[in-house]
Image 1 (spheres, rainbow, N blue to C red):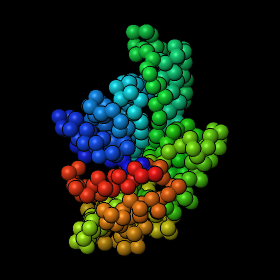
Image 2 (cartoon, rainbow, N blue to C red):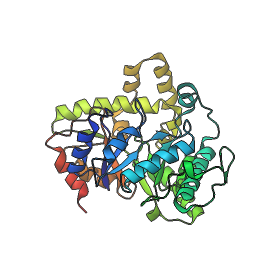
Image 3 (cartoon, rainbow, N blue to C red):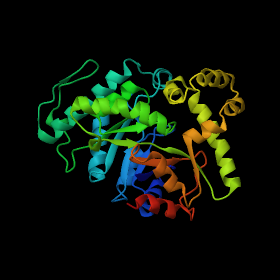
Length: 339
């Protein structure tokens, strides 16, 4: 299992130093997300100052961008990083698409499948000079003149991961993608009984096998060398679990443990703004189900034991992450790098 890390800064003036330190510590991939900032710009900076660490989006929101725009960005990042870029896409939920991005939210599963196919058709045109003639239900791309064609690159096979929670999107990932971004709100039971079977169905439909596919996520960790450290982190993780569980989209994660009735209660409290009351509904059993607790000496072993065979890459999801200067961090990274 590889240990990755998220982009803890999106300040373009400080990313060079941050990316160098991430690479020097031995993290396998540096992921940038689309929350308060553009997800691609930080990776463009990081690509020019690193040579080993992989660089990816976890995730970029797919529907507000034309696949042609996304194709150009990914092509340039793949070239700049000498083949280290991973394009991670997500659908986001209906409210954010319609009210934050002002785009239609329709048939997210079929549309995501079509975006992946369109991207590969565009890249094939650029790499091999084939005629661009993509016609789908949602997108049409059949014009590409030399003036707008960036031409071939040395590493044209760009991995595409998509984010998925429900079975339909997980099947699509298995059928047409190189990997799945599993939401941090997960458990081994949910992965084993819900996610993996859906992905396997997609893999079989495409004539592929498990070795052709990557499961990536961030893991809720309650990490500390003292009871006080772990206690603070535990309550912060409890609050974060309550936040995610209040969204109806993530009900399958609760349903895997017969806790689906909790979603409506949490949603009601979120509408009321009762964040403290939400956290109080998350029991210790739930925290232990969705998070891994440990010290800096044993957290790597505990995550590997819990998620071995279920995940290929993870990062620490911590509401209050430490800086890269934490002297205990290199040991943890080193233990993940051991075979």
